[in-house]
Figure 1 (cartoon, chains in turn cyan, purple, orange, blue):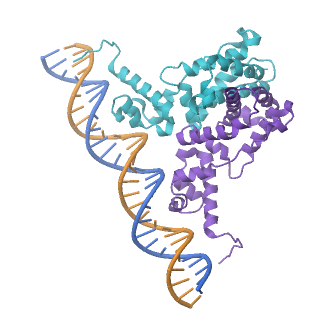
Figure 2 (cartoon, rainbow over the protein chains, first blue to last red; figure 1 turned 90 degrees about the horizontal axis):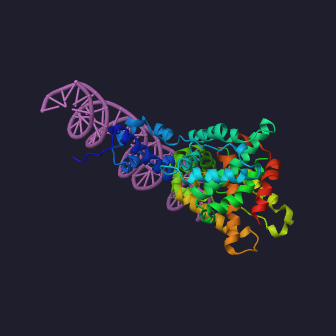
Figure 3 (spheres, each protein chain N blue to C red; figure 1 turned 90 degrees about the vertical axis):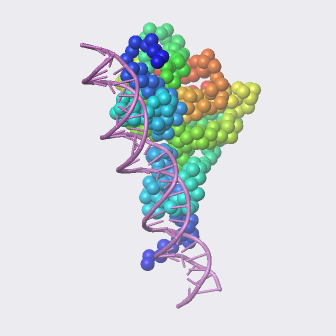
Length: 188
Length: 188
DNA sequence: TTGAAAAGTCAACAAGTGTTGATTTATGCG
DNA sequence: CGCATAAATCAACACTTGTTGACTTTTCAA
């Protein structure tokens, strides 16, 4: 019997395996088309375990899409580079996330699942909007955050979901150079 | 027996009714969640008829998402207003389309259905990219079209799919004024 | 009016879904 | 080691899906 030298309890290991498989599968297929059996197969486990550990497919999805944008404090960035800094940060979040695309999962799902759309709006309200610099009225700040969202979500949609060839072909630096000024202007 | 004075054959009328119901249902629920039974119910008809008239759910979806962007010839627009003109045109297409959102249907579906994503890319290649003004190399033109797509699809996603409050709240004129310059810059 | 073709209805199918309970296997502490 | 408990498996459920074929009703030209 091959004893893994992993000290974590067995249950935690399979729990993590399910979560990883779920993230990968949701990212690839979206919420509706990713079946519990798909996820279980990818984790080399019985479908019943998925339910046993997370209660339901919905519950699993909720766990799989919990994440933190960790947006930087823009007031600490030199005023002329805030747009570029924000774009660079978003690219980091989307490209380098563990488990295969936490943000991509939610973006995909939000197109069809009302609950996922709710979560997306909630993230916008609690993480993106507050990252805007104060100055103008509350409505104006919200408007600016909304404009930033249109550009950043559109970029993510074209690059990671739709995989539009010219957008996929762009390098990180090209994107920062092209889209940065847009965000910079939206910031006010 | 109330005789409608409609001269069109009965079959054409129900065919149109199914198509209308399909567009509305697909726009509301997306491809996966919109069932043939839903569509049939909305058209006050038997589910079997949907298949009888369009062969399959896929076939119906293909018919429901056939549309033409009718992009304007930018070379006829004064150089300083091309961005705004393009944004205004997209807003017209999205907001004023018959049957409840042809573009919205495809945008929603493209997030999960690979075939819909294909169609979206095809529309980009055949309608959006050619609308760009020539001048630089082929790759540069494609890049510009891609950037325009990120902004316009992002706007549509936030406003019509995600329904992000501040983006929904913006008026047509506000959008043209804010997003127009972005597109203008992407055009070259 | 009559009768063949078109349009519409009905019930059912086969496949796939999330989920559950009983049962078996493995774990890890005393 | 032994054994209670947790973990994993298996088979099956209730339900929904797209799709089909047999049947009935309506349409409409001859």
